[in-house]
Image (tube, rainbow, N blue to C red):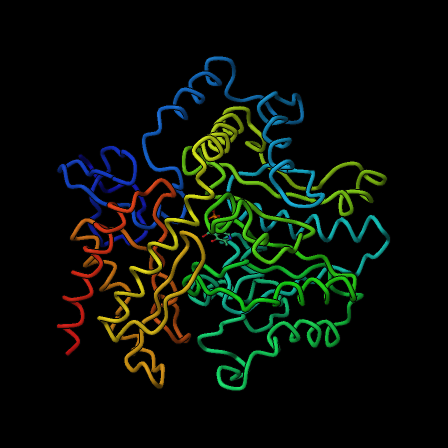
Length: 444
Ligand code: PLP
């Protein structure tokens, strides 16, 4: 096959060609089997080759695949928006559909700004985010992200939004590991608001559990309650970027439910269609919609493919499949099983400094010295080496912070499809153990 026209992520790398998928497994055209231990990019949450989805897809395609949203609404898109409002906490009753997580967070930003404009606060247009975060690759989303390599080339063109520290307990930004957590990382939000002026700030955005830029970094209890309190005190909207965590991945339908906090806006993607089609959403509360409903009556965002009936029908069937098969509970149960297995690996391999995450969004961080938590020199390339070893042995895991220049800590994400069985988890862990064995021997 001619392979010199498609731009792949790394141009001098030879990628296997995908043939097909079934359950947690992917197969290349040479017949090699891979456990999809990361669900791709934390996406394929119901596994591969699910025929119920193929049927829903075919049924909708037979009727109509595309009708432009300025001309028609569709039964599929209406039903999907209704279903999401039933699943979401509080009064997150409105959905705006887009095609990727980046578009969902960027739309969240625009809706937050528009909300304040329609209330007469023209200057409330800054977004505060956390350094160590990833909200997407488009310029607005990147302006809110702290992912150094992805920002680097474009920094002069990005909005200079304020940022605060992440609730990175393993490497507490306030050195509270020993003295006890006082949620100072949450209080940083208050300081940032006071510095910039609440009259200039539209929203604060955060991933409930930090994914791509850190490897399932989970905040201390009380963190989001404090964040929400600060947002309310200063009239700042709270956007939860649930692109990676949403739709069951962490053992709750929405990760923010772990802390009982209802955000004003939620961005969804990935698991919303479990990889069966590109679709994402920005969900909005009644309160945030109110001035827009009374005012311009139109959200100034959207794309040609927004709310297309085919993607909506597929996503609707994915949500129904997750409910029918009790996969949110499965994520919690299997997550506990996998977590214990990973802790077992940490007992064997002293390069594992931290095991973290919730449900089936788990992370491992690696250190050259456990006591001092000294990270490996980035030149060693620990994360890519481990990821490549596992891939060669037929296990896919997701590289996280190790790819970030200038930020300490190699890390990977382990996030298999929510349908994984205990026996399959055992196989996954066995291959991971063999890969770590090989790596540890090379390092000594
Ligand atoms: N937000 C979060 C939390 C993500 O993890 C990602 C992707 O990894 C995005 C946004 C961007 O999503 P997409 O790659 O679909 O544009």
